[in-house]
Image (cartoon, rainbow, N blue to C red; front, side):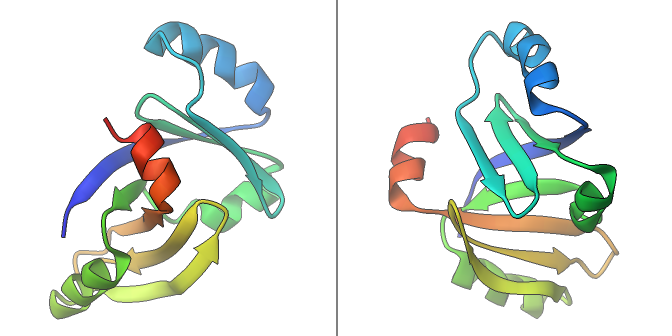
Length: 124
């Protein structure tokens, strides 16, 4: 099992207001931009920018990071073997599959297995 990329989460009110500064800081445009339920997301550099109304963002604020992995099934087995609990089960999403897990130490993380096209395009 391997971690392909880790994103720090940034919580903002409006994606279009946040991206210009991040583009200048990272020297690159957003790699990925999409909507999911009532929020908008953009991946830029090592940031996952999450925008939308505060009450909608709060639904996802329990996770401290988003981690892209090569194989979500293997990861889930490793998490469970090490005392983690799955707080959101393996679910299909716009970029592939994801789950949320609370580690035995209390940290909660979103783990994502991207579809092959995204891995090929975005993992360097």
